[in-house]
Length: 119
Image (tube, rainbow, N blue to C red):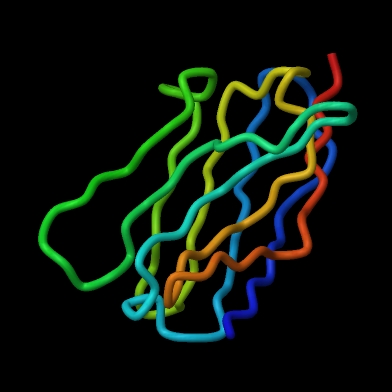
């Protein structure tokens, strides 16, 4: 089992920035990959960004086209935490953001954190 705890959401004006954090309950070296997804009201959950976390050679970050150049996913192995830095936020980025971990051929989710961008 992997518990994921997100934090860092909130209300921000368009053009502003936020950083989301996702703390894992286990060493992220043992997790294949982690990522951020979001779900806006009335829409399906969609991928935002992913990052490889296992001790393997290769692998790279991946971003949705809508956030490329504005969002950055990163990790801190010592803290077992993955971050999502969001710059130049737009009202269309308003959603509940969920952290995801792929571990032992299972997918685990955090409880979500609300991001609201006002125009």
